[in-house]
Picture 1 (tube, one colour):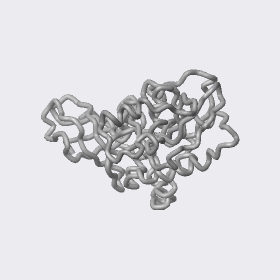
Picture 2: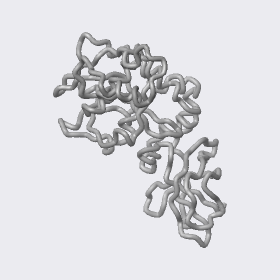
Picture 3: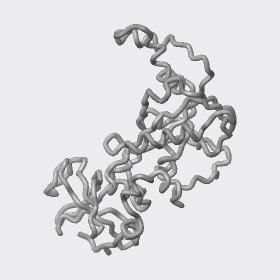
Picture 4: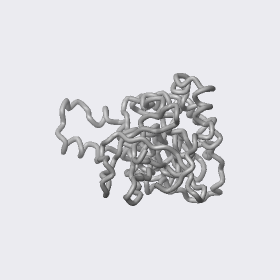
Length: 287
């Protein structure tokens, strides 16, 4: 293996462990995220079109956004009216139910969707539907939900990656709508998706961001080294870390060479600096 200067987390984990009660951290993950300097949203776009696929994970994560796609928003809006669409029919067939949904006419004018981005450890980057809206320039009309938050709609990355969006904080919400109530409810639901507290700590590490999979931010590109073999980059889904700041996870793909590990095996990796000073994630199988 080439020479590396192994490093720690530059005090970041130390600060978490010494100054943060992780149980409190877990309960207040939203507030913690909102207060992180790296996660503050500054309106620097000046009207520039933003696509979800082009935005950084750190900016999107746990910040309310408005997705701009009329047809997609209308389909989501109908989920809030399923009791009415379903009607008195106890068990409509799939074809009949599909036709009812397609033929249902929304009373409100809809062209956008308010969502809360979050990370599902297994399914990856996801978006919790909060409300449907009408967006005109920077004015956002948010509609009351007809289902009283009974319908849960979780959207995966692939479904919205090519859509434009706006940050909610950059928009003017209709004054007669209690947006804080809806945001509070969404955050309460979000807490149910909180993973193991160590996974949450690893998710909050900005130094891992460069190596995260954009669709699965808990999956990290790790470079594997073994004497006599060419270094190989593979995906690892982190699960834990220890006091030595070694990170443990599961290998997600099968190596092209005989490293002595296979897809699904438990592996560990750590941070290293190469001779150019670049920070990389390394699994040294010669240790």
